[in-house]
Image: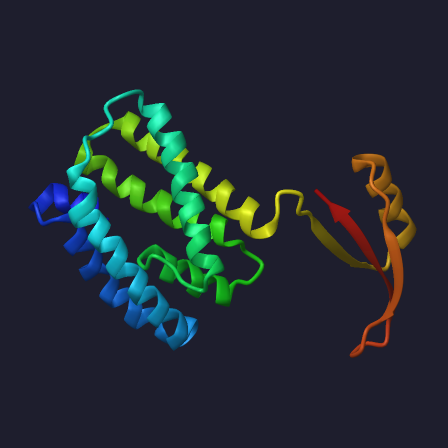
Length: 205
């Protein structure tokens, strides 16, 4: 968003980043908590300093854009993970991502970030007028999302599916026949209805 506004009005990216964070801090305060916000405030100052002072001193990379997109995604994702593992963030979209994560715990931080970033990238399309830039932006965002989720949740992490059903045998056969996975069956009784069911535990990659 800062890059888009910088293109439109010419205000430095570092200042815009800081200003755009203010409403997000107000929105997210109750959800993420004071401690998280204080840590993030320190991180935001450091990030703003690097964006506004340090990065402009370096030459712009003008090589292949696909290389830039891939490495931007890798480094961005790795940097974000360092923030998250220390109970902090870089502000901005991270505030929204953590707020949504609190409300929708089944979603991963990476997926939430991906969805928000895609919306922002599409907003930048008419401003920059470059279809390839949008496509490379999507690629960089996808790579950073994969890096975030793989490091945060483990490279070999899987998902445990819990299936509550009255058709135990039929479903067990279908799972074994369709995806070739076994299931563990646990007898269960509905606390409200008193109806007996099976709960299947099935580990998936």
